[in-house]
Image 1 (cartoon, rainbow, N blue to C red):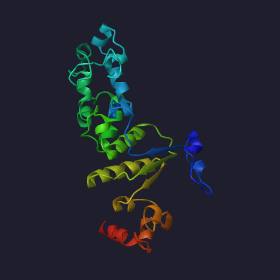
Image 2: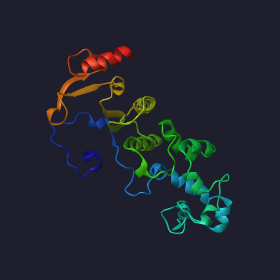
Image 3: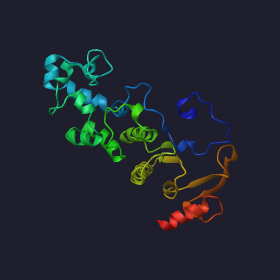
Image 4: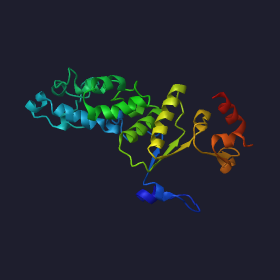
Length: 260
């Protein structure tokens, strides 16, 4: 981050970094909340809400009324409603409808419903389809990020990166992405990470889950314990090489590889 963005965080002491010329961007996908305000949600974070507002502004009814994009923003006076029983919008704004749905109705849709609803709108579909692909189909577009789990926040961030055009030279750093995930969700996540790797990117995953470890191209096994009792490289290599070694991870990984 210091190298690419001149970030304020000072790196810890290190001898050298080799191969930094092979990457041009670093993306840390952590589990922190999506935004600093309760108003942030998957629609605003991924940027798809801008496309949704633009769609509503260009509807005949909105043009007749002279509505601007701010009208459909729940952050701006004029669109937002101060006493609307959780609808976020005032009555006039809700009268503008696309395929029978108001902007509030759209924000109340799950990702799965929205993928179906916006099937004919490529600019919107592209961004929400990735959220569905990454296993977030049950989450609502306008769900406040404060109600999402750390793992869900992390997957929204990952989906946002996936929807962008990457150069194929990005380093992605994920910190324990499988926390709280069901087995099927882990498989979905691994498919996504493999997609990033196939495009030429590098994905560094800090993880204990053996389903993830066995699918890695290269493993760096840290130990001998956690926290202050760790920090040393116990073994490194392919999962098969680690499993054949004598580190604490070896017997568990060996069992995992034999079972799969």
